[in-house]
Amino acid sequence: MDVSLASHSLFNISMGIYLLAFLGYLILATSQNRKIGTISTSLLIIGLIIHSVGLVLRWQETHQTGYGYVPLSNMYESLVFFSWTIVLIYLILEFKYKHKIIGAFVTPFAFLALAITSIIPGV
Image (cartoon, rainbow, N blue to C red):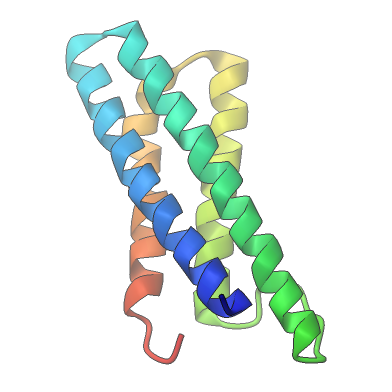
């Protein structure tokens, strides 16, 4: 599989996982079920790991083309990185302050940033 296609596929998988985590956090907001919160956070961590692998593959792709830059040079890469950063910072804050409910407000931004990358032409 082409590295570009692999990284794009991993970003799409992450997007789906972020959507599931968002739905879990919404359920948590209405039910206060701690198990749902734990599942949502676990999904978010899995999504972040997959997203991170996609970023590394994207960076590797730039080296294969001979340019070797950090993947932040265009709108697609910037949105992918923005989404990754949102999730990373949220997870750090969640573990520090133990407020899982905030995930219902944060995860949609990560999901939407990746969703927008899916409709950018020429990627």
